[in-house]
Length: 141
View (tube, rainbow, N blue to C red):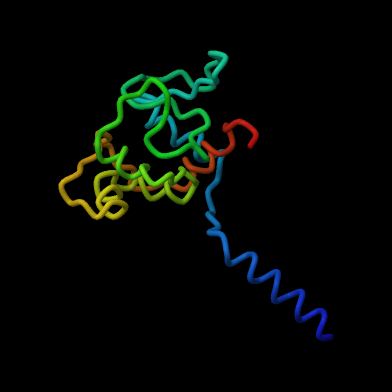
């Protein structure tokens, strides 16, 4: 192998390891999202319902890339607001971790053990798939 090939391979491997790669399946996530739609909808800004759902939780249209705790027209709990106060945005990895145990995620994110999530539902499996699905229905970035 030439030095140039080795150097190119090294840069490619470094780039791949820099960002977390999730093995989520958007198609499977669409089915798992049926558990979520009793509380969440996915509604585009023009009012088009991608998924008709409840309004107990925030609208999840465009959640990937949105600052945590900032969906318009939703009153978040103190923990979620605190978790996003530093400008952190939702990505697939954060969503996959959050849905497993929202209150534990808030504790890990903020360091505050007194904070509890308003979302009491825990998704034991399928978090990566739901995250992939939400990314697939997001607006172009």
